[in-house]
Length: 520
Ligand code: HEM
Image (cartoon, rainbow, N blue to C red; front, side, top):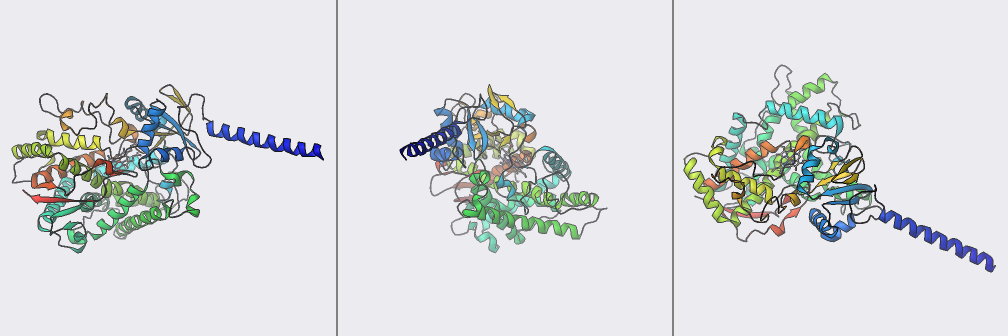
């Protein structure tokens, strides 16, 4: 009896020891011999809980803390069961963006939930042939309709939108949907919502050959709301939902699944309606816009709704999510960025004075600024560039993936590792940007007062083959809007803006705020 007891005890002790050894091995496991240092992993969530413990509101700042703690520019961790490396070093980020073996994208559930059938679709979150094929087709065809280059129609549309905006801010709302974003009594506008229609409407013309007049723009404000919700409710790395997707069945609200699915479906519904409208009046001898050109490809290829697979092809679902990839940033990324720049201007009235002087001298006050004026407005341009740097809109970029076993900065990086570029970190790296936390547009001007692109080493849009597909459009739109608003209005806020209040989702946003526009 006592012998069997001791045998049971022995077996129990051995099991416990094996379990402890397994847990220790699991927690300390590194995916390669020379993997960057970093926090341990826990079952299911990996190192996510450590990131959350360091800074649950801003994961990129948690990663910056880990860089300090481990005294390493590269931090190795696990997001769920997926190995990941955060790169917090300027030169190494440049290297990642340059090398094609880091061009992959992770298969994030956050991205899949945008598609009706949870397939990998569009450009942002795909890789391989599908990404290459769709990106090439979207950019080449949109280019034909003026996207990403100097184009009279696009500039006219932007100016038309700005003229409407000036009227809205000066005279107050004329339509029901405008009442929620402009308060005539105080002369204040709600940011970033007041800009929801401005840039999306320009994209709309390229996609559908139609631009909405002011009285019909309620739908743009509605989709803008969903788009902003998507941008705010994600997090730097794709949410825990991306790494343990089944959590949505247990905690649909807490995991943010329900809300994210809903806002994406609503936005996609509007895009689908736009596509259906184009299809109804489609004439292969008169291709009017991007969606027509895509429909032509669908007809050539047999017009599949969806193959239900992740493979490349012209499919109806690809069209919807691909259009969302361009519309969503136009709806809320540029407005969010504009809001951040306006807050910096409110905090720096001296900068506004310099901008206004420059505008008065080179443009005057009898017409709106044009893109042609840009070369004569280096200070205004430097302000936008400094705004893009100091409040980096996508603090951790969009995650890349190593497509082969490789090395980076002396570390071993196994195939399949997520590579997270600390764009916010490197845009504040002191040896590259002296006094990184000071808003100082002059840093991008040469001794002759001219803009020096060499001095602007910031990377707000990424670089290389994965560079932001909307960089030119966003830079042009931001420049024209900021210059126009400063030319036409003085701006103020009741409470001083505080960058510490910024929210980090997929992108950085300031919490909704009211800003007063007083006509000059
Ligand atoms: C201020 C505004 C914007 C900023 C700061 C910004 C920044 C970025 C960044 C950092 C990336 C990831 C780059 C990488 O993977 O390394 C990206 C990707 C992308 N952006 Fe933007 N973006 C902006 C506006 C826009 C606009 C207006 C559009 C379209 C109209 C757009 C379309 C895209 C697309 C399609 C991608 C995915 C590119 C790919 O994976 O191949 N972005 N953007």
